[in-house]
Length: 114
Length: 309
Figure (spheres, rainbow over the protein chains, first blue to last red):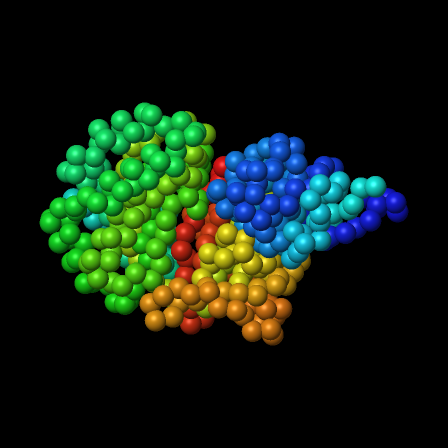
């Protein structure tokens, strides 16, 4: 994650270890997710609740604006074994829909892929 | 012994009272500080369904459940349950037990038999009602709501995914409301840092922390020595507080938002307390607690499962 050609664009709390690359999909509501979220996308949202589980199941990773290690998003992501970064404050504003990113669920860093 | 109700200090099997209530009775028996209350047995729900001729209706609807029709069928089953009538003998006993409580308000929570077990946790799937007036009518209404929430869309989807039954006993826990000044969750073993515990805390009631709507303060410490290893202060920009019998969301003032909510000493005291809870259950625990008037109250304890799927 320390390659100089990669740019750290976001830092949150690493809530489920693992590093993965993929396409960021910003979904503020589940209705938005039902329209555009595709299996294998990285789900970027403000927070999750049980209604989000159906999208989390097919997500490559999850990034949220708020929450700690014991919040819903973190616990579900760990159970699914996918990387998760929580408590970024503003992931849904900083990241752009369709952006190619790398998520590190241990350090909490998100970098933009060239 | 009552047919319908159990005190938190008596003993019944997990099938009578569900996993969450069972854990509370163990905490109580072991001398931990929990809010005063009682449990409406799971059989009361099953009898309620019988008395109101709902068993075959629910079985029929449940047999039709598939992914797509969940919203409609869920709605239908829940309205059946909300419209039923609780029998006079059950009402009388609930009323008597309410009279024995001191608090003006209670919390009403479900405790399903398969909930919070080691294999499947319905955490967060069912309704919890906070700050209900300690009067018969609102309490009965919220008991029905708890029962109905067993058939919420997400609870049904969860059971479809896990292949669990759609008909089982659901007990209801009624406890005096603690107007929490601080709340938190303890994992007696950290999800991915070996040999550590993890505690997250915030202001007011604990639901914003559990749902992840705020960024809590987070503490990691050593399981053996309890010494703090790491501390992150979160952005706790809002809280749920309990005012005039109502849980309301208020903005946290700027200073408190970035300030450590609970002292290091208190965090370590909680870590030790939670370790002794783990010792009682013999497995790492996920414990919800709150602080009111300096006193630590335990609200629930369950094995760490992950288990929200």
